[in-house]
Amino acid sequence: MKYISVIIAVYVVLVVLDVIFYRTQKTTRSLKTFSIRTIPDVSILCAIGALLWIVLLVWWCWGEPETFYTKRVLLMVVPISIIWLGVTFFGMIAPLKGVWEIKVEQDNITVIKAFVFRRHWKISNVSHCKMKRGGMNVYVKGRKRKAFFIDGMTDHIGNFQKRMEQEGIEIL
Image 1 (cartoon, rainbow, N blue to C red):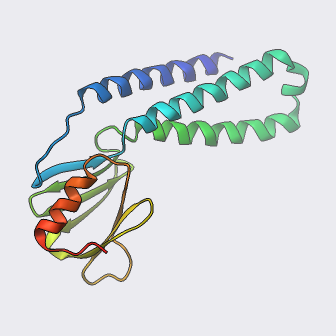
Image 2 (tube, rainbow, N blue to C red; image 1 turned 120 degrees about the vertical axis):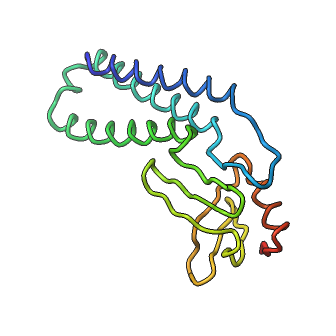
């Protein structure tokens, strides 16, 4: 039970950070320098999902402790809880700078995934873009597969589309 209070405290701190980030986030109209990130609403939904899961576990633990503490139930609940809370944790930190981000600076495009995975491209090397149902696939010259994907619900995807039109790159 003491671990649940630590988990709840961590999620409360993350919710406060997300609210602060949401209020201080600035939109830019520049087509030369901007960054594309996940919208803060995702973090709020993930926080609600994690909180509901923790409340459900505590309610089940206090309501029926004899069934909750059986070996069969714990072998199912613990892995599911770890996966669920891990996914919601990454969903909560996704809008923060540097977690998942696409930076456009002049002719450079930097794609950052999960803090450490970085890929660099030049806008002059982009061959074309394809609009899909959920966003946009960006293709680079010399590659048959997509270079990266931009979600349609992210901030500044309109800036990226206008920049591609300005550079003369077709969007299919």
